[in-house]
Amino acid sequence: MRKYYKVWAATVAACLAVLTIAALVLPQSFALTALSDGIQFLLLLSGTLSLIHLIARTNGRLRLFWILIAAGMGLWFCYQVLWVYFEVFLRAEVPDLFVGDIVLFLHMVPLMAALALRPHVQEDEYAARLRNLDFALLLVWWVYLYVLAVIPWQYVVPDAAPYLRNLNSLYLIEKVALLSTILFSWRSSKNGWRKFYASLFGACLTYAVSSYVANWALGRGMYYTGSLYDIPLAISMAWITIIGLQTQPRSPQTEGRSAYTHDGVWLARLGMIAAFSMPLFGVWALLETVPDQIKSFRLELTLGAAILIGIMVFVRQHLLDRELLRLLTHSQQSFSNLKHLQAQITESEKLASIGQLVAGAAHELNNPITAMLGYSDLLLLSQPMNAEQNRLAAKIGQHTRRTKSLVASLLSFAKPTPATFAPVDLKTLLRTAVKLSQSQWQTRQTEIQMEFSDALLLVRGDSNQLLQVCVQIMNDALSAVDRLQSGRLIVSAESVEETAVIQISTDKSLPPEENNPASGGIFSGLGLNACQAILKQHRGRLLCPEGAHSGVVIRVELPLITPSQEKSSEVTMPAWQTQPFS
View 1 (cartoon, one colour):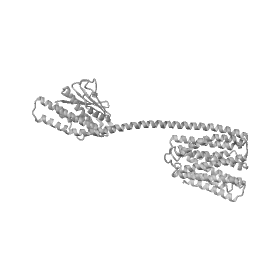
View 2 (cartoon, rainbow, N blue to C red):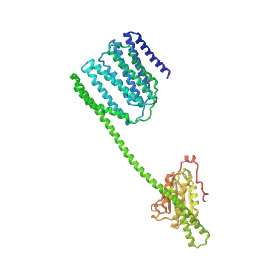
View 3 (tube, rainbow, N blue to C red):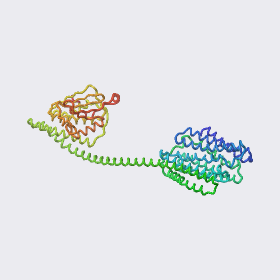
View 4 (cartoon, rainbow, N blue to C red):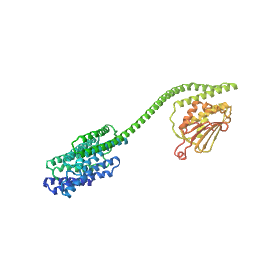
């Protein structure tokens, strides 16, 4: 505790000591009355000020909580000011029909409203709104009870005896309700909040017991201002100061999330009981043996309160309907999403099964295809054959290599591997693809013409996957060369604005009906799908331009990396890269 807090607490303790000594030593007199009223004035002022500093140093719901607590203490302080005015300045007894009694009764209302905020837990906006509305309904009902039971005997037909009897009974019920609310908050809290509620419960219990004992002594003529009956009352006042000084601005902290569940349901039930009790009070007001003026006042009051509470119940039901509609819509969306997810999972399981089957089949096919490819090459190299036989043997090797490429694409499509992105030099990548396809274009006696721009063509991607794309489109382009009986394939690369463009073309054009990927023209279906999937990962695209200049076979576009990316990265190539073709 800070040093001036200790001085503050010591001053409060000194005031209590002076009041106790005065009650024991001084006889009943104006001096004792003035001293007792003055010390209680200071204690209540101290308690209010000890809470105000918490308001200035907090925010949100916690600040509102301290504002309401301080407001309750402020009303109690205002009531004490009225007592000081009558007993010290006017030197008169406080009248039985005291206008300030309503201030004393209402000073607990902000305290209960503060407890209804439940600052020790987090709540969503809807739960807090419903809780506040339920509590507001109860507060309206509570004020209605005070006006129904007390005010008629104070203003309509003044009579001190029923006024004091009803006032004390209703005030006792209010104190019991406040203590019950604090006890409930204490049970649902932890750590620092639990200590705070325990201290607040102790202070309020001391006040409730002391006021009850003081009223008992007053009824027997044993009470006077400054007597020993005021000591417990002063202790409860001083206790508020200690609570305010011991509580830090950010402590106690909020303790997790709580939904509008058990306690919220009971608060709503109490609100409904209050609403349904209005007709019963109307019947009671009509049947009670009281002057007609009081009957008329109570019936009109009950009618007005019933209308007000009915409006609040309507608003509450409207909020509840909106929330239920929102939850229903959310549930429908969740159910729809769940069905969609279930369908996706089922489809994924099917694709996974197909992928496993395809991968197994592809591995089994690789062995005979490799043997066929080897034997076809040996046939060309080792056995003397005529031109027609050489052409047929070359066809066997060509279609075997194409089948091997299809199986590789099938395996890649069934089991895609995660890409590792890094800057890749496209011109070096294309030279490597041409080198890897050398056996095919040399067998076909096809001329490869490479036309690269002088600019550095760097893209960010997985070099192995991009090389797979280049090899695949080279193989398909070479197949197109066979169908056209063309002798030259042109491989070009250039930069267009911020895009790298790879273009593979022949010196002759395919018929329009064949130059169409959808119909399987120059591409195999699996090869096309595998290439498109890889390019999509790399933010690129694969095109077969229609109506372009003569001989265009395929076009690939990939985004170039920026100069800043180029400076901060290293150019990579596949680990198994061959020497560039020249």
